[in-house]
Amino acid sequence: MSNELVWDRPEPPSRPSPTPLSRDLIVSAAIRLADEGGLDEVSLRKVAAALNAGPMRLYGYIETKDELLDLMVDDVYGEIALPEPGTEWRAALTRIAHSMRTAAKRHPWFVDLLGGRPHRGPNSLTYIEATLATLDGKPEFPTIDHVLGAVSAVMAFVHGAVRNEITEAREEQASGMTEEQWQAASGPYMQRMLATGRFPTLAKVMYEAEHTSAGPLFDIGLSYVLDGIATRHTPA
Amino acid sequence: MSNELVWDRPEPPSRPSPTPLSRDLIVSAAIRLADEGGLDEVSLRKVAAALNAGPMRLYGYIETKDELLDLMVDDVYGEIALPEPGTEWRAALTRIAHSMRTAAKRHPWFVDLLGGRPHRGPNSLTYIEATLATLDGKPEFPTIDHVLGAVSAVMAFVHGAVRNEITEAREEQASGMTEEQWQAASGPYMQRMLATGRFPTLAKVMYEAEHTSAGPLFDIGLSYVLDGIATRHTPA
DNA sequence: CTCGTGGCGATACAGTGTATTGAACGATAC
DNA sequence: GTATCGTTCAATACACTGTATCGCCACGAG
Image 1 (cartoon, protein in one colour):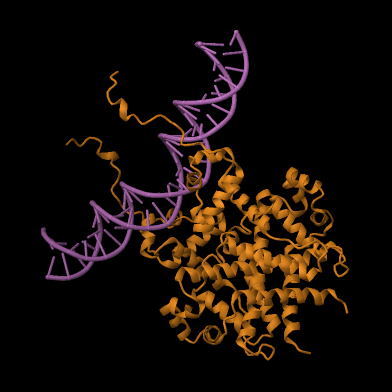
Image 2 (spheres, each protein chain N blue to C red):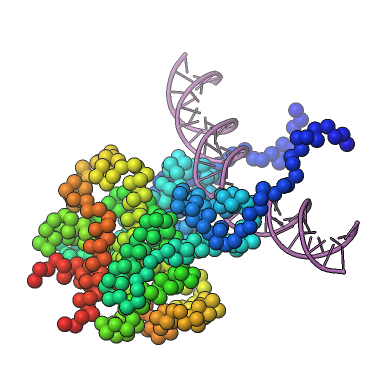
């Protein structure tokens, strides 16, 4: 064989500093990508690239992409601040609800994954445990079934409310304008629809409502749920 | 050129009966696929194949895949039975909630799309209109903001509850067993977790609770929300 | 018969998750 | 010191996605 062209040989491996990896590194890289660009930005290739690694290297630490997503979800559960044990139950549930909401706002992709797969990670289990514990043992909730019913209701409301709120926020951000200018954004189509007169109440909402911002609306809804629970469980 | 082999020529086009297409046909084919095999089964190629068409043909009727998904969502909204106008507000909201729930159970993929994109289709607008109309004008809800607050709360609960329920159902179906055998399904992992003693309340739920099935649990939660709204809005 | 024209299929491209393969490395056995 | 082995990772490959582009073919107008 000749040895011409030896100089522009493709320079053997010479690993570009093969950073040591770990599940946590991978997960936090994925979370960073998702926070910045949404869930679409989380592909195994991109996550690997962010860690100076080839895509296949991740499979040494992770079984499948769904597993990565599960790990990301559990990581966010770990961020949710929980109330001190012993807090009065209404205050405790309110705190949990608010923590969940702020965590979801910090990681908008979280709600997309919420409820997609079951949450059995250690952090999500402690989250659920803490939530159940706020009611367990209180005299107003004599059996575990009472506890479960109330907690399910609160969780359902929180999940739904947060999801709706995030969706709305994404939409506003996408069109780059506030809710008050919204009717102009979605423009001709909504104008025409409302003009048909088939949606009078909706029109009233669009034109007359004060457009209470999402925060207070969340609190109002939450207090409805908690009130409902309280009135059912205080025989007085 | 020779003309041997003429007989096994690939038989020129001879369109296999170019069925006339329409948005509705495409949408209902997509819905059928999704009902049977989940959202993953809805790819433009598969939908097209179900209609004896090439993938690109769909683009004559549809701008993008997201548009198809939006159309599917709106179609489901169209299935949701709405209460007669004039029904007492608690009954009306209860009816809407139940209709939404049964529609979501008929089309489990619906909840995955709920809140992913805004719902501005004609059917979803009439759904929202009907929901708002149940409270508008009632003396207990003097301003449109009161209406909006209450409706938002109910909707948030319903969305969250349905989503959680569907997720759980999917999971049960995936592992092929009922909630009562569930602890055996998720098996060693959950066993170990519960055995750590770090989740006493959760353990109580798993072992002691009656496991009220989803239907009644939904009703309990809904009545919490409605009770909360009622007590806030009846000054008596 | 000829000539657009427009609908539609084939092809192509960039991207995805993942299976398989093969090469390079460190450690161990003689 | 050399040979072998097992691990670690990168490269390649495959099936699949949504969509842009191109070119063919049937049909209607002149």
